[in-house]
Length: 207
Image (cartoon, rainbow, N blue to C red; front, side, top):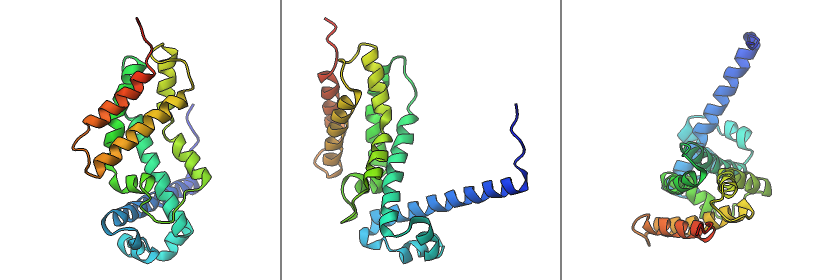
């Protein structure tokens, strides 16, 4: 069965929505680049509008205020991480897939320094994401929970709440990445050692 034609009004609304999404994405890119290069004081509606080539009214309409913009950036960062992890190809079994997610997560963090600093390093002083935003942010990483649950079902990991293992793995990964970003670690070897040790802690002993 084919869908009904959009019609003139439907096509117009679809195009309008696409334009809105494109503008929103451009504004977030401008804002996160300013945050990374010039710091949080650069995140004024006037500066962002000038860089993006639009009016401040557009930004206020889209995000409400500076706090709304910061929360949009916070959520966009986690959404990008979700897409990055979801793009990791499936492996023959869930344990191999879990192992592949480790380096992919590190790569996602290091390739998005502006978003990383906002999400994990309080790059905007005074910004506190809402409880809803925190819930949505954690949900963006649910792929870890799903793959870990598959590993438990397949007998690779001990029976427990998947979120318990996922949060331990996430915490260890973040600690190593933050140290690497701060220049205390030269490469990803410590990250690999830490995440491998956490997974091994929950690995089923086959002997």
